[in-house]
Amino acid sequence: MLLALCLSGCMPRLVQPYDEALVTGTEALYAEASAVIDDGVATSPRTDAERDAIRPPTKSDGHFSRFEPRYDQLIRATDLMILRAMAGSEDIDGLGRKLQAKIEEAIENAVPSVCAELTERFNELGATSLTVRNHVDLKCLLTRWKEQHADSELTRNTFILKRANWETRRASLFRIVLAIQRAQLSKQP
Image 1 (cartoon, one colour):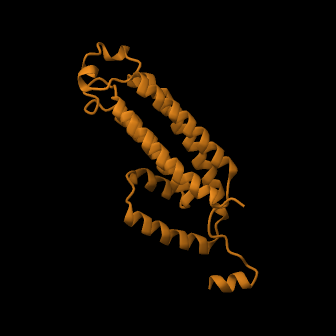
Image 2: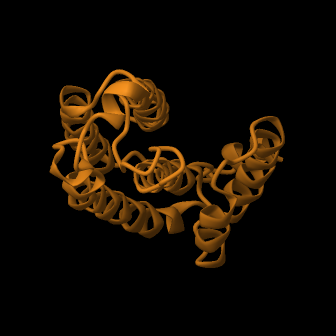
Image 3: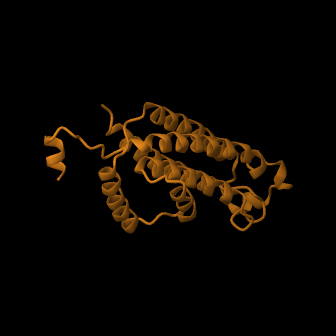
């Protein structure tokens, strides 16, 4: 069927078009999130004992209150990218949406989303393209970071993360941004 459409001159649009603004926006977000991680590494204790010795915890530069505005800024930046991706997702035709749904179903079955509730909310808004979903996953990652830093149990009632937490974040950020960039750049004309 796809071959017949191509031969008839009606080339279907199966994927969302390349968007330079999404590429540069993702790169800028990566740079800012990396700076947050660098600050977290620089201001955070290595061990639980070092963290427990910080009194009062609110005086620490690694305290959640110092990072909360930066988390919020990163999350707003992903919201802007999601809006841009959603606006561009209308360019996918019906055949492309069906094919994409099958691909996404296979991906979801292989690697279930860790942020199902956020993905579901965006699905209700019609955010079904893979490009949109990639940016929703990025928002999910950043939202989880904020939640973890504000978690009294994880931080042993200090609201201070350890350096190892920040290093894990660096690896997660790198992986998700690399996946987003690869997906976008593969569509580059």
